[in-house]
Image (cartoon, rainbow, N blue to C red):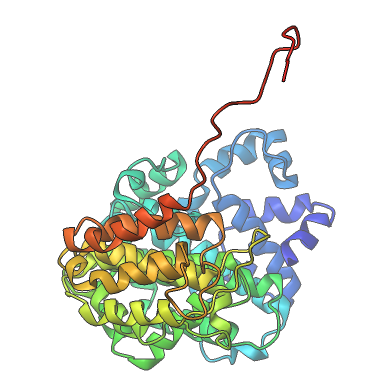
Length: 449
């Protein structure tokens, strides 16, 4: 990452002081040198971040050593806005709107990452005046698991961010929104996301950071301005292809997780407008299947998202039940009797079936003994009644646990339980009886045959 290289350079005290005390941002940032601009933006990024006392950073050492600089830093964010710094950054960003993403070199992409991060901080604060929980929502977009209602309320918003939001109430928030064309920013982020996700080669670290910054910025805008979400969905196949490219990208599990969480948050915050319903169709139509489908290798986040969307839509989904049951029957498991490998596609099918039946309890009876037979005889206890099923499909701890939960859900319907009981009875008979004696004698007891 270019920032790591900059961190290795000797700290320029004069540059740091110049940025902290700057008033003519147009003159300061309109540098002909990309690397000079990158360094200045790196300083600005530091000044924008919430920092704990004693942070190991060369810029932090300069602040800690100079009380005048510390005093200037306390009001720097507002001074930056008041003297037109935000507008200058918007102007720099606009230079990229007409550029082909593939034409940017790594240093230019590093500049774009910093521009998006800095502008996002101000935009997020301005958006929070109308959407107070926006900071918490975005924090969960980058978490390792899907957000929940309970957990969202436990996010601690930094005091520095709350202070910035309060400072924007006197008209500076309106100044930020007036300076930024949100539709243009949506177009820019989508353009870069598509180009980088569809790139055939591996991602550079700057490119991965650019995807993360662009997606978080896009998510913040769409959570704030619902009309822009509607226009985004109006793109039809282009929007759907972007969703799928992110959910199945082989480039990074963190990127797949970020896309999954972003789409879930949009669905959860737009239940009334039916965003979840819109997502279901392209997701249903792109269920991974077969050993030749490379998407099966990176489908965990896809199934996690699809399972989480089911409670957000009132659709009955009997067709999905039929399709998942057929896919489970036809699936050839890649799990081995010995080893830790979990078949992601098998696990996803079992997990999705379980969630579907829990959220659509009327489908438990519809699933019937046929699905009970598939889960019990093919996934858990092969008994020779199913051709080619000599070993269970579910061999890993995770997939077997999910199959057991699915079977338990199915057996809440009496007819399904009745279909399973004879099989369980036969299995019980195959369990060898315990020995009559332990054949053990304490050492001090003489054993005489």
